[in-house]
Length: 223
Length: 223
Figure 1 (tube, each protein chain N blue to C red):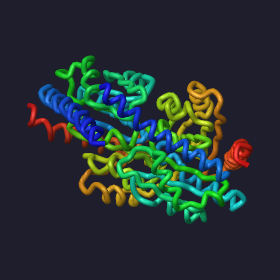
Figure 2: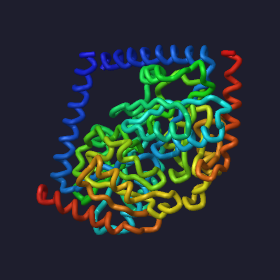
Figure 3: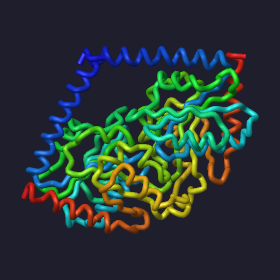
Figure 4: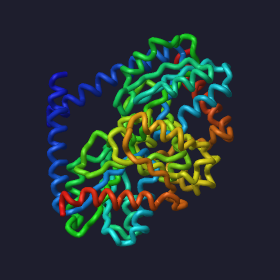
């Protein structure tokens, strides 16, 4: 058992070392990096597609896609005109810093403003792994129900922003935004909660404002 | 690295040993056991609530609820009149056989026909852990999109039945059942695909028929 604990510590610290290296590289290159986490199907890829369309090149954006299998998400992002690197984890339930470091080989960081890392769809494991990002984003969606923040606290407590997607399905799913907000606040007292629909476009400007503002907030550190 | 592999093997075999012990106990007690897996919010608890209402005591049913935190799901199941034991995993991303063995202490297996184990909401990790169950069930839901079977093949390839929930949201989400079925068949050639809505009740009888039939199929082994 002691052996197990020592081994886990060694793995974690190696991963943390690479994450710190990535954070330095991102900062030196002047790229704002956000790590997106959610359940499968909450709409991470849709949010990034819609973000690309609305930014329309005003911020130079790229995406790293994390999936167990297929390059479907990367192809969607590239169709939106955005450079994208796909990581396939095999059976892996989250991205780690080494995988991200390898994926950077295909991206020109110096000519980017914003890099989104779309993690594996999983509301548990990705939260425990630092990828060197500046900000952490968790998505939830109305069909999942209001109680996910308190049932999966690890995913919501450490994030910088909570995005509630699919508000166009609010009445069809009987979802209560007030209840959701109350549950978010039980585990995260400060993160802004952005309510939007990638499908209808409602609320998308608030998300883009958040991206622009957060990018500026980290800018003095590297410009 | 060799040390890591040996350690992992030891952990897996201990877990497998307990799972085999559970499988023997379930069979000796004459209880049909199904392990339910899905993303957070696909409707595992709703399916079990609705199953309880429709069985209405004709099969004696119990539930083990797996969650990172809270006893919300257990309380929902108990309100449906069904005995339920809650496992809180803390940060744990899946149930393991030892946790299930401990949860059995509060259940009278001899007086049960069907035991459902609702796993932690996670489309990756639970698939790798045997809980001694007779059958594995994966749920998906229309708002998650059609491509989850090929993006999370580990969750779909080893299961005995695929349940597609929330078909009442099919048109609102632009979901194609034909596409979903095609994707399921790419990773699982044999599992029946049951399409239903816990909300509207459509398709629920097919699910109950499956439960009754599968229970009978394993019956000769223990009666």
